[in-house]
Image (cartoon, rainbow, N blue to C red; front, side):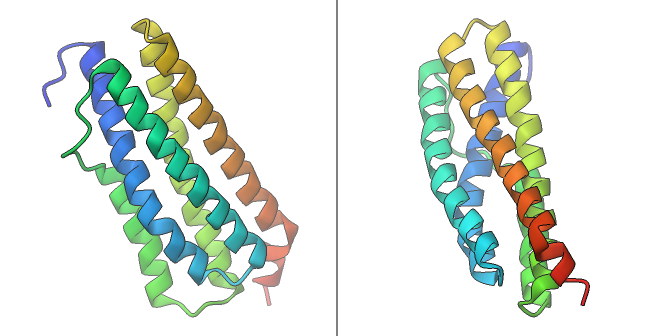
Length: 163
């Protein structure tokens, strides 16, 4: 996609986020299944439900702004998910894998926080106020997911992995 102006950059960002959310919907069940901590499993399952709603929301944003969403692949998310999948494939299910999965999931959240933060600002600048509000809602959810993962790690998962 040729980027000629801020509208093009926003369109690219929305396409990227759409692809990222679709990939995450496919990856989260595998991460939940690999977790041994029940709190971590529940957090992944909860975030799967939230991510499905975020996917619907980004599709609505695309419609509101008139952006074609299909056909784009978010390579950044693809790499993050590949890395998490490698951890699952190469390791036994135990507390150490839980810690590694939390770390991998937080990298995903931080990637999304950066992308949604940019998209919110682009949408505001371009006067897409409804889209900006919807994107901000998702940005807030991503921040909450990151904090929840930190809480789980600090709530005993990191300590149990030291043994």
